[in-house]
Amino acid sequence: MPAIVRPDTKTLFQIDPTWFAQNGRDLREEMHGALCAECRARYPSAADAPVVDRIHPRTAEVQRVDALWECLADHCGRLPGYIAPSTLLTVAIFRALLANGNQAMSPEQLHRRIGKSNPAGILKLLLGAEIENGIVPLEN
Ligand SMILES: [Zn+2]
Image 1 (tube, rainbow, N blue to C red):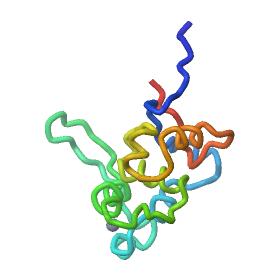
Image 2 (spheres, rainbow, N blue to C red; image 1 turned 180 degrees about the vertical axis):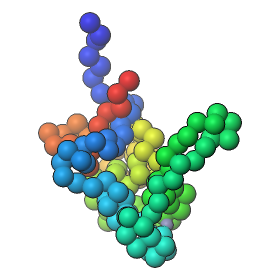
Image 3 (cartoon, rainbow, N blue to C red; image 1 turned 45 degrees about the horizontal axis):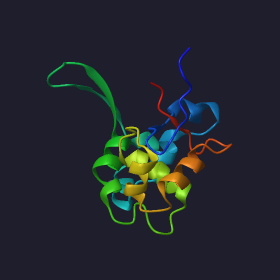
């Protein structure tokens, strides 16, 4: 039987898109809500942002690429104010993962990115009774 690993501040967390569907929430709508004004002008609604097939130049593997993820990772997430001092901690964590293209991050990495709370506080929040914004430990 595998040992149960207790999550700590180095445990990686990511957004689970299936959680949104199961909880009657729309991840793409929430991603759209995090866009900056410029990107929102380009994509007035989430439905306006295309999901396209892209062929990886080396592996020839076909990937589904969502323009919303690209916007958040390459543009909006780099703007000052994307995560502001007044941004709620739960929102700041969610936005940090969005801007990271939903590559899993640990509470220590999240703390460095958002500059709020502390790694232990972020871990405690993520392990709270309620799953916040579909953020769950990365399954190995
Ligand atoms: Zn933007």
